[in-house]
Image 1 (cartoon, rainbow, N blue to C red):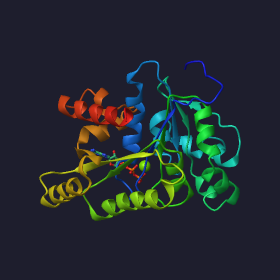
Image 2 (image 1 turned 90 degrees about the vertical axis):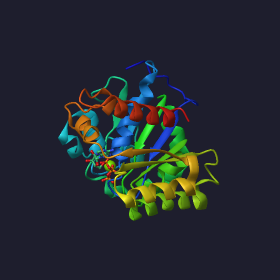
Image 3 (image 1 turned 45 degrees about the vertical axis):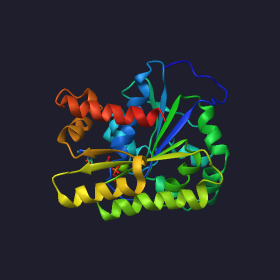
Image 4 (image 1 turned 135 degrees about the vertical axis):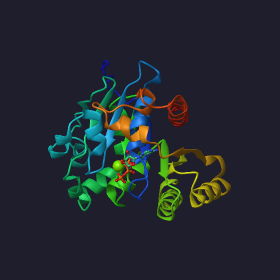
Length: 263
Ligand SMILES: Nc1ncnc2c1ncn2[C@@H]1O[C@H](COP(=O)(O)OP(=O)(O)OP(=O)(O)O)[C@@H](O)[C@H]1O
Ligand SMILES: [Mg+2]
């Protein structure tokens, strides 16, 4: 890991991956985006795992038990303690891990005050990484909503299914109602994931999303076994580094993630 700068880094880009619908690919995309941030070999990335499932933490550390460490990690942000990022299996990616007791912050008034204050994004930037990638839990609440205030880029993965489209629209609604006023420069993109374009209902929903939201829907990613296989390697790797993945799949994921990171 490179030497840390100590003062606030204005160039830190904060990327938040969110949808209240479970299983749309938030963690998969967060993992891939973190790796896409490394196209520049000098770059450094901090991942925040706000999900008490801690799946991103497990993938990044290759350690199932990381979620049992219920002190430190991303909880320090809500505690007002100095965050101490840990190493991951990738030398340029650090982590504030998620754990099974993160729910305790959801109804904690002091945690809420910290999370919704403008000091939180300043604190994240003061850690002086080039990128901060945040995986958000599916349940609406403090850990789901407050990251929208910290974000430079909001990425909303969805599936071609009613509940996921509703989740996508809810994120846009929250941004319109309560985020854009205090975070006016935030950008957002949608990514259709887990599509099967042989299924008529998927094709129709994908087409509707594109008609409705135009090029804000960056891509349609199909359900492909190689994506899950790459993540289940030990250590997990992005699909573009997975030997068993076809070239067109590797290229598509690399290009989509690079486009998001470059926004
Ligand atoms: N394009 C894809 N092709 C194949 N499998 C995928 C794809 N995207 C995601 N998956 C798989 O779908 C499952 C759900 O993905 P993931 O865990 O990333 O979703 P999530 O939105 O983070 O879920 P949760 O809401 O529970 O946090 C995982 O098993 C993942 O490997
Ligand atoms: Mg997840």
